Image 1 (cartoon, rainbow, N blue to C red):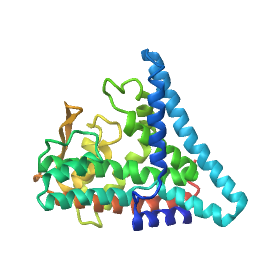
Image 2: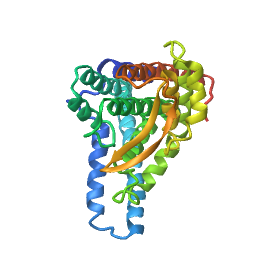
Image 3: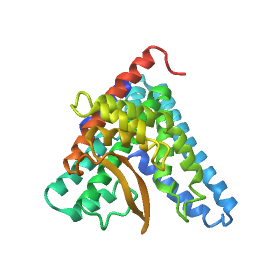
Length: 316
């Protein structure tokens, strides 16, 4: 647990400096290389599906086995090297500070009236088209992705750290990276990314629901609307097309009293998302900062909850 706490603290302090190497970038490079090579060979629907399954197995498997081997090798040299490497690997799996920084940059761009910059910044963390978004669209996109990634980027990695240490957390990051790169339901990735999308949904099933509950609890110390957060979580969490994203989004929407969802464009095609929450007031740019505060508060609650479960032997 001390290694996980140290990793979380390091992430809070320095985030993810672009100048430092990161396992996710290596995963992305491998995924891109694999896809490029396999598309030269696999032409049929069945072949593309099989290639997608192989990509999932190799990416997650390599992430787990390489992490396990590196830690084993470090442990055979020095316990200090083992613990240092373990903390470093765990730290790279957490994205709280990175998520906060990206959201804050979007907020400041909007606050300075630079809509074009805010669109470009948003495009770096979402899959939707951002070129024609107005202020409300940029704000909604930022709030939605902060809510969703509170689960995917922070609480889910912590969950798998406590469950299986750095190797399992790294395997989860591999699955999550796969989904973000090939898990689209468009013509190009419908078959190739199907396995990754299904496995990512399964991996996030429990963490997403825990995140929704933790956001509800986090809204209390932040003096947001805890009762409405719970009400919207129970009412709207299953409206989302994703089996998991609706839980953190509904909890956040209820806590701050806004409505999320609506029309998004992906690769130039409109996709209608169901409304989540109640439009008690229009979205405003400060809601981005509130979503970040909810992310941090719920993450700290997750650390406390998982630590208690770990100590009580609650992991199966």
